Amino acid sequence: MESQNPQTSENLDSNPTSLSLDNLVHKVKSNLVFRSKWAELNGAMGDLGTYIPIVLALTLAKDLNLGTTLVFTGVYNMLTGAIYGIPLPVQPMKSIAAVAISDGPDFNIPEVMASGICTGAILLVLGATGLMQLVYKLIPLSVVRGIQLSQGLAFTMTAIKYIRKVQDFSKSKSKENRHWVGLDGLILAIVCACFIIVINGAGKERNERETSNVDDEERNMRSKRIKKTMANIPSAFIVFLFGVVLAFIRKPAVVKDIKFGPSSMEVVQFTSHAWKQGFIKGTIPQLPLSILNSVIAVCKLSSDLFPGKELSATSVSITVGLMNLVGCWFGAIPCCHGAGGLAGQYKFGGRSGGCVAILGVAELVLGLVLGTSLVRILDWFPVGILGVLLLFAGIELAMTCRDTNSKGECFVMLICTAVSLVGSSAALGFVCGMVVHLLLLLRIHFFN
Image 1 (tube, helix red, strand yellow):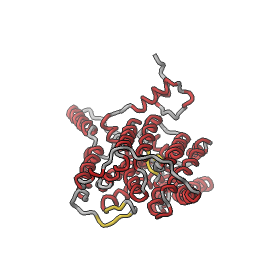
Image 2 (cartoon, rainbow, N blue to C red):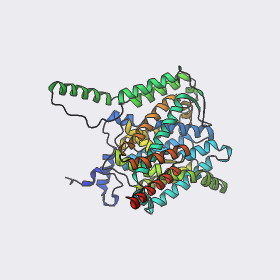
Image 3 (spheres, rainbow, N blue to C red):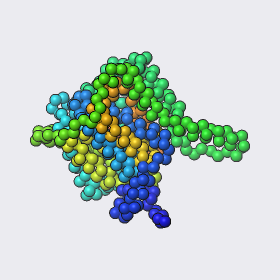
Image 4 (tube, rainbow, N blue to C red):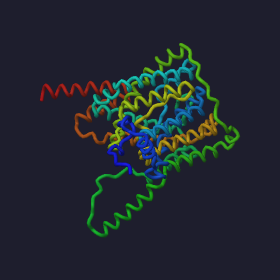
């Protein structure tokens, strides 16, 4: 009999040196155990509203190797699920992708990959030296909440744009208003959103009142049974499959474009110009976002959603760094973690590492079986449905800020949020939030 270990409820990064090989294997298995088969499968769909548009845009605009990207992100997701035991998905680095799409012919795949390698190297150093953990401890909660709220609202605004407007992902632009009817119309998106609301509601209910009346207890039991049944319906998975079916209906000839087999994997050829442009145009704007949203906000959100499983900033920073120091050499899209992805997968039922492991297996299989030809299918996937999935992920992330109680914390949080949204910069919002927080502390010290 193996003795009970008090660390069994924690993730692998808690104290890896103290774990024996047997305990390590047991921990990996425990992290990948499904809490609920359908709920975990449903949760795996929660990040697709972010992942698909960015990957599709880079594939169409810059000829990103989609097959290689799917293989590497699939492996990343499986390893992340095994290590951390929570639904922490792997996402494309948004700032680098935005520069690549908007900067024209001067910023191509070598520059994109150079950006990812440089960003990964810096995050690895920050994690390995312990500086990232120090930053995590020093940043006040109100500032972190401001970053989370701004990111959540940014997701929701992007989602509404996807739903209302026709999108040209290859140019990262919105076009004319979407028609009300059609296989990618407004009515379709609204129906999908209503379906998810009916099934999932606003999330987990808290502080439900106990009743002693027999009739009320029976009614309560009946209500709980209905809720349990509805919770087992994988709403996001159903909506996503519906979108796949519609993609084939919209363009039946897409079947002829499918070629089976993995894409050829090649080492990216870098020039000094690629390293220079990649660092200046890609790494510098991406780094603050990666530190704040991919590490700091993710670690805080993990403690909110999974008490007892708070991730260490050191570990997350190192794993993000290693992902990019490996995959980017072969043309896989620069990746990180994201608080929005974690919130989205949690919203739709993800509760364990098995959730992202499912997603990872699916990506790996698609990358090996269909390769780059998968882009032909994604190009006809209803964008309004992607907007619906992204909408709920953004709302879930923004709702984590509801525990901000004091007026001072709300003040700092909202200033940080407003500056981040208006200035389109999480780094600028962070700086303003920290300045306001320090000014309030000085005011309390000198005038109270």
